[in-house]
Length: 128
Length: 160
Image (tube, rainbow over all chains, first blue to last red):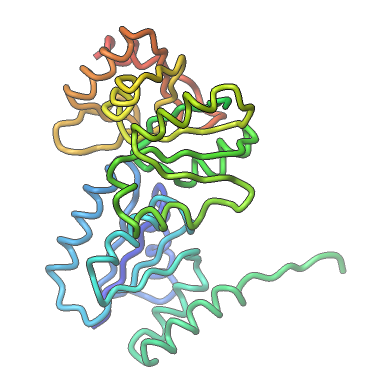
């Protein structure tokens, strides 16, 4: 089993999950967190306690801004959790690809596809 | 050096500092002053890794930070100094640097802390440290990003 965490500013992680589930249906083992209010050490503690209750082979943790406090926090947790992967720049295409392929692709391929599809989802259209 | 922003923020280097304040103040240097981070190579690298290349960034303990500021006081380098708590600022004042104005940008919730603003939570110890620093003549105001309202921290404490 892969457990999924999303740590982001304000209510973004909750909204992202709600939106993903409105497109793909209910997802299992997904844990949203916000950096609002809590001190980062306290939040790290909450996330580590949550991970300890899970029998996950892998932990995937999505964060929004690279270099932001959610990302820093996720990486501080990762230092203590050997099977944890942190991905920054979370967006909707990224999550749709991730949940659509979660139990189908080998882990490394899944990670590559997630990042590639997240970038491919960004296009510019102008003029005629 | 021109300490244009002396900031208490328990998130140290993060989006609000690097994306908002640096752009607003056209800063040239960030000093992350923390006795724990300086001892932890992994965390130090983590914080420094996302600072734009256009900015000088140093991580140092309270003693070295104070010496650096005092020795470079005449240099005109626009600098942001970041510490995680009023207690760390107290240490810096003990070493001999007393900033005139201090921005309190984030002290977040832990057990024993009460909410004053959505980004300011203070324990009795924090309040005691802030009152001690205020008696030294330091003016402290809460403001998370440059466009948001400023609040005098003593007014917030007294209104509780």
